[in-house]
Image 1 (cartoon, rainbow, N blue to C red):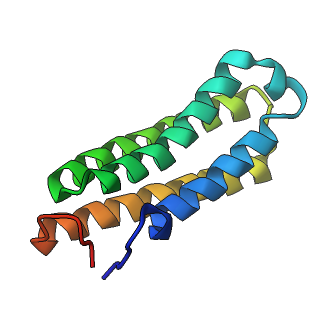
Image 2 (tube, one colour):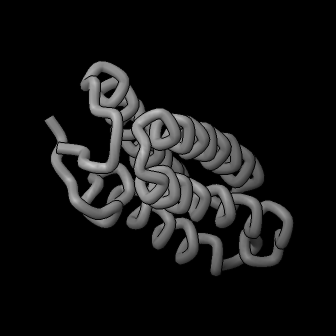
Image 3 (cartoon, helix red, strand yellow):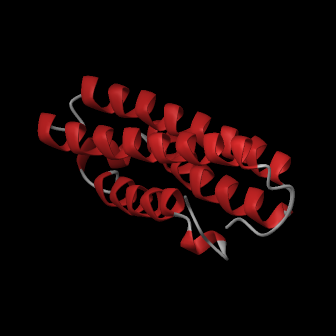
Length: 129
């Protein structure tokens, strides 16, 4: 059962933060760094995961939180799709692609688990313990 007082304590957001840092680092190199459209879109999608988790938490209501978590999970799917494009264009080697893909899937899994917990918890407001 998750317990957190601030959005910074949420495991899914912590994982998304690490993923975002990795994506920014990887997309600063080589051809990836010069494909401005893909580079910027994958970065925005990563940041969106973190931002939606934080914004949903700060809304204070469970229903809204779940809605924002759903958007965050969708952004994780977007990141995965962009990773596939980057791999297909040879911007990522296989091991980097696999590592980032696994991290993205784990982030989405954590978000999904939190959504499921909140839906079943009966919690209505701002204390998510």
